[in-house]
Length: 217
Image (tube, rainbow, N blue to C red; front, top):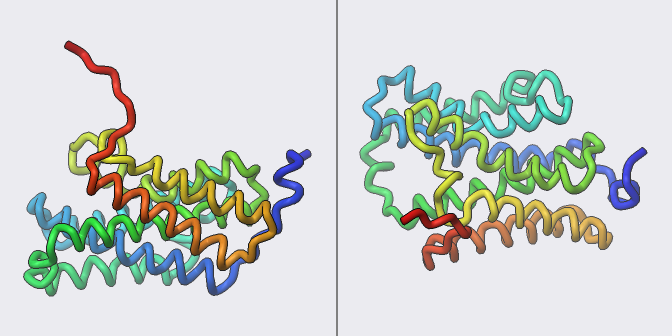
């Protein structure tokens, strides 16, 4: 038996809106992963692997957790093609990408996080996951790929210490669930949820907001 909130939420159906949001986020994160690979001095194979993992790692973890097997990253060729296209674009045109201003890369990262957060919560709701856990799946989708990327590069995952990163994804996913509960049209709910995530992430980076932490003297 699902909870009363889950029972009242409208069902998601796989359609072009969810696919488009997923693929745009995939490309953005693939570019980010490839740039991290260049900074780490990886060869073309390592760069493409990092692009794939960054772009699709979070969605793959989400799909495995909610029972969407095989994951979209394996079942649908468009996801892998989009991730490799992003990585390939960076490899062949890396001077152009490396001249991209830092604030623009931060903006693209926030946009990718927002897109994946709303796509993740939408996919989880589509599979009948309860709202609270669906919100968590939105955060996993948004931050999971970057976490795996950082682990592969032997770095402390940025999600554990960066300015309000996973919290922004949780906020965006929660807005989607709340608006759907209020019978808001799905496209509007996803747009507003993505806007909430994007805005919080950008303001947090600008103002250097961080979640509370224990100060050890």
